[in-house]
Image (cartoon, rainbow, N blue to C red):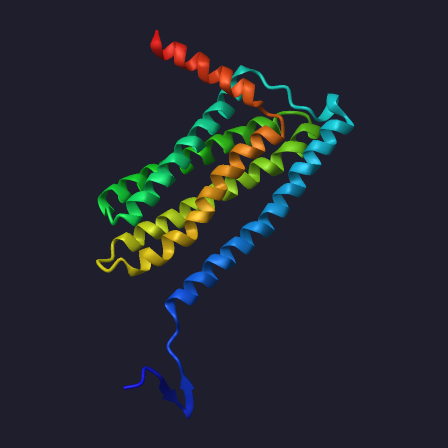
Length: 213
């Protein structure tokens, strides 16, 4: 019996799930590429303004804001590791471990979003030149964190289904968004000169010494 069916004389072929999945991934990647150009414009403006007038547009951070940025990077690194673990659990059908990892990832994105909101509040208290150069970029990070959390909640909804078909179709697509948020969050901190790689390494060394003591 043919899988095709006719409605009002028109022959309809069943949709190919694999084709739908590939199209969804392509759409997500095209969206992320477009969003990258948007972020790159904001970062390029920040770099240009700092080179044009360093004394007005370069943010000099005290110890407390540096601590928040260090925590942001740590949270994102932990989130990235958890995402890789969750991907492994997902492929191995270890749903209990996958759910635990996804719960921890949600907490990481929530913490990262709160840290960025705190940073925005700090920036608004600075000179108009400073918050002009930095607030927009921080707001983009909050937006990415919020979108990631919404997608995680949606994934959690799909885990409630006995049939994991929807979850299997959803996670590989939105995993790109989660990893994108992690990578962009870390790269932007370094590109906008809020913290250098050596400063981050020094902070890690100091914290390790404090923990050992």
